[in-house]
Image (cartoon, rainbow, N blue to C red; front, side, top):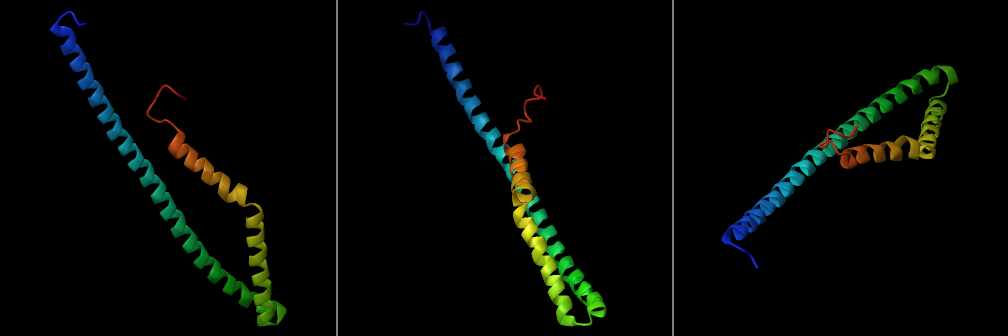
Length: 124
């Protein structure tokens, strides 16, 4: 089938280079996955820290507003009820707007993180 040994050597070299290329692509995909997972996990940790700090601030500000409203309403229980109602209204609006406030930004972030091809500089 082959005219000489040079053709067989060329096929062996081609096979070795193809095997090497596949191994390099596998290593590249591993590195890219680690990079993207690192970005994802660090973003999630940052969001978690900001949520915890925001909840703490909301807790203290709500107590501050309770005592401010106590002097206006004359009742500590009434001012707790007002602040509780305001927080429930905010939670209800966040629930109604969950797609715009939570789901869509998360989908955009994950889509850009995992689907954008930054390795090809010719694409805009």
